[in-house]
Length: 350
Picture 1 (tube, rainbow, N blue to C red):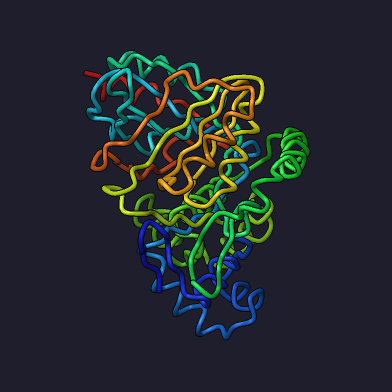
Picture 2 (cartoon, helix red, strand yellow; picture 1 turned 60 degrees about the vertical axis):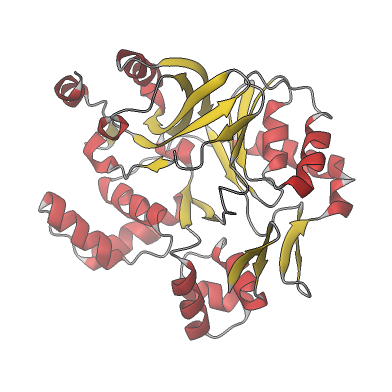
């Protein structure tokens, strides 16, 4: 169904069809309709894929008043699972030595307090990218080419040599997405969203069970359906799908950019297959990916065309260092707004 051969991801045609449909569908039924296959076939393929290919609901962070932080810091990763808002961490090696990368989904109004907390824990931040906008590679991405004969994923070299046209689209997209504003959300919206971030097609009955088991609050499926259709749908951008190569053979790399065109280059790179995500800040950005050797020359050719610097040089992830934390955002949401857990911090700070 999906395997790696000679550094390339091989994907069966029906599977590729389903993956393209997953990204623009809120329900598996919508996937089946959009790609023209029976519903039972779509369900079967999605169920077989979901443990190997994470499928996540991607919300509009600005409307939720959240930012995804990428914090590069000195210091070993220790006890970060007790940190509020911390969704993951990993270790990278570069020319300057070892560096830790922390990812945290933080209410935008509390970013400075959160960075202070990081320092109180003994870490020294080197660079911080505030992902006010986050983009993911999608099967429909401009520089991605699926070869149905070889059933393999590769770079669209024809478009690559004319990437200026794609840059114009990216500039327009970035300007348009700057216009979004903070929305009004309810705690049930947060409960649904975080469940679907874990798995894009999670059933509302599972959300109902979670809310009851953890918080003792009975909610009807009808009420959850109302919140999903009236609120959550409008906060949805797309679903991401993440396919990884063997990390021992092709390590994840971090490209931290600074400069006038940092937003454009990170956004452009994530149009290429084997890239994962791009975090866009003001004057800086981060692209994470697993570019295999056979496309590295194209990657650096693109980078050299933009007015950017890589202040931390090339960073390669230590294969066994990636840790993911499951954060319950409901713990930090009260009366329709985010709260910073000062009391909890005092309890867990050594």
